[in-house]
Amino acid sequence: MPKRPVPTLETAQQQLINDLIPTARSHRLAWSGGETQLLEAGEGLPLLFIHGGLSQATEWLPLWPQLQVDFKLLAIDRPGHGLATPYDFRGVDTLALADQFLAEMVALLGLKQPVLVANSMGARWALEYAVRRPNQVGRLILVGAPAGISPRLPNMMLALRWPLTRPLMRLMFRHANANSIRQFAAQLLVAHPEKIPESFLLAKAAGQRRHHTSLLTFAQRIMAYRTIHPAMLLAEKWSQLHTPTDFIWGEADAFHGPAEGKALLAQIPAATSWQLIPGAGHLPWMDAPAAVAAAIRAATGSRS
Image (cartoon, rainbow, N blue to C red; front, top):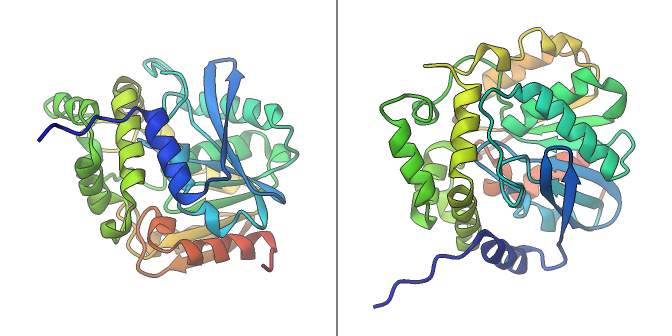
């Protein structure tokens, strides 16, 4: 039997859009560091979605059908991810880049104090931007554990940094497929991998194949040998955060459990809510999209 052709990211993404939210549109945006992609759907209050590490803007699409009636949904590919141009992160101050990139995106989109919905490393970028430019962010909704809460990382993530395993991880990215993505997701990202749509797996695999070098240089930049890099730790940044901040936390988050998440409330002057999503992992909307959508509506005051 002949092998099925391996889809490009453009083809895989379009299939995912067709499957989940056919009204979504893709646009190209130019910024000072290259080009990126904007995905857009819906009408209403703008929500700007920022994806996590080893990911892309399409990661949010399984959630969007639950929200498109109430919100204008905007998702961007971070540099070196998705349909953004490749990015070599060696020697780059990634937090300064986070601030610069998000500031440029907000300006390009004409947003005024937008609500940022962010996950994992995307949440770390959003937090950095909000601390550095508090007047430019209206609200933070952090879905899943933000990166930088503590030095600890799962061993599978540390394998991106260790010299002995780094070549294997590069090979894994270069040859990513639906099966490898489902296995990775089962270990780190979701509580119910059987719920992940096939087109989602194919799009994520295509993104990793496209950006294997960008993803590895980014991982090496943000990690120390056995921990996250000290510069990435939020630590005293929490006390400097004055943007209203809501947490939506998966009960089975593999990076940081609910107890760690709830403890953050005492450290953040502007923390407004903390919502636990039962039976959900680090990407809680993949396991429980309706519950996460309801939590986002509650955080923004929408009653639909």
